[in-house]
Image (cartoon, rainbow, N blue to C red; front, side):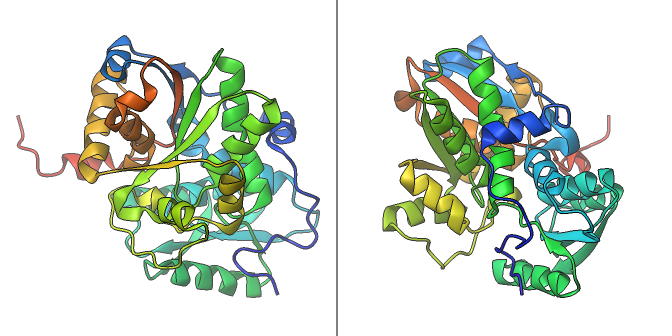
Length: 324
């Protein structure tokens, strides 16, 4: 029987980000790259912000979900996953476009608006305890019912689909020195690392994660995937334990991981709103937070920063403010 991290036995051989880009070209938004001279001055580098919060369903997750669903064999009755929200909404939307049902196991403390988004895109939500083990067990239950598992990150098609962010960036920005992206489960960062390797360019790929969910940094330092993980961070999309496939890719490409404080994440969200006028969720601001926290590392360099999502519960954020 398939488990939460297994791929469908009936699925085709793994694809690379370049092949994924060809299939997804008319299915996903080619998101813009934003710039701001004032933010450049703060770091001493040239910053290029990849606006994945403007992707369909509000995050980069739609890329991987769309590619994975497109590659499913005929006759599939439905799909299932576990998600803190963005992958669940993306999978629900991609599945509905193909006429399939989607079941999403979500932690009971998931952001309310992300739960609503899954349902708005046609997904059926199953709540579980807010632990990795509970999420994977919930997905295993859905698989036992005959659904095809499409996990949020530890899946070859998901990695290839997320890697199209890197394919687009390399085409959009000349002479890049580095790409910085957030890491939770690692599908985005691993996919970008593969896209850069596939391009033959000399571009450093760097991961960024909250200090309160630093399993990727600890795993890279230990040379193995750590299993003690109790995340405490406002970046809800980055609380997952890094995936086996993803970590192997990061290790093979020697991708460093920078960690940032909760205060740095909040400051980054404020700066992105103030300067770019963009609403970015905490997880989506982590990559910029890492660049802002380490200006000496990026000074004089052309750096792409992935703004991975914008699904922020603005209503909750504004609740309690005094009326005019």
